[in-house]
Image (tube, rainbow, N blue to C red; front, side, top):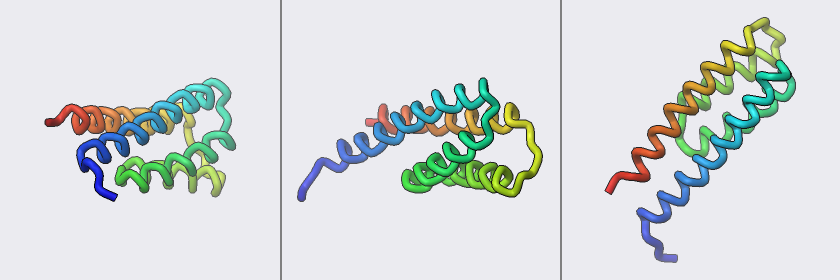
Length: 102
């Protein structure tokens, strides 16, 4: 199959961008409910997506927080969510930059 490499990359990035925006919405709900189980589940998905799309720092942050939840280490969910949201924002900005490159 022969494809336009630029359009393939754009589709790949747009897919990841959509997933990240969905995760941000879910994070907002988790923040309101302070739901560690829901956070653990979301982090597992986020970790996998981030690895698939090459966002290593986001994947690592997700993994560390997920492990903290599994091991029942105390943490401030609001602070953790803020860190994750910041990392997602940086990834989204990088995606936008790549999509608008000529």
